Amino acid sequence: LSEINFVELFAEFNTMALARALNKMATTATGPAASSAVAALSTAGSYALPELSYDYGELEPYINAEIMQLHHSKHHQTYVNNLNAALEQYEGAEKAADVAKMIALQGAIKFNGGGHVNHSIFWTNLAPPSKGGGGEPTGKVGELIK
Image (cartoon, rainbow, N blue to C red; front, side):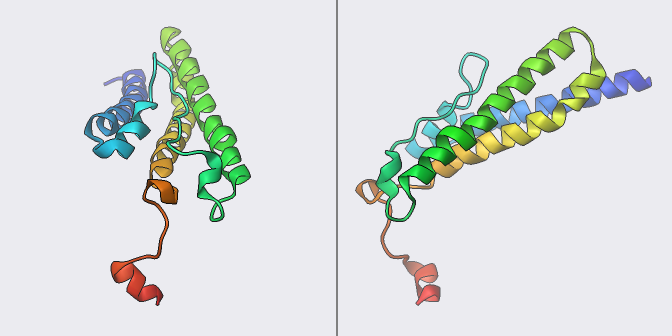
């Protein structure tokens, strides 16, 4: 293989690996919480902030409503915005056959794509008492705490 073909192959592999990971997550998610987390991962070719199944204030007094609002609508939204921007730039670089730019964008795609996926899962691990969350730890974890 010539050097340019290797570079193009490497850039394509990294993008495809992230796409495969996101698609696998979307197709293998089980349970309503996991399904709702991945449902918002891709819409019409771009990624979107998932809606929460609870209000920001429902986790108080353990997590402040303002902290939840900032974490979800600002911090997580930033991952989504940056992922979409990087993917749009990647598409332009791909059309222009700008391999150097395609490679340069890999870090932003991985970082922001990973942040988006991690946060989408994180929100499903939280639940207010009205939806089965809260209470004292049980089992081995509960025993170790006592």
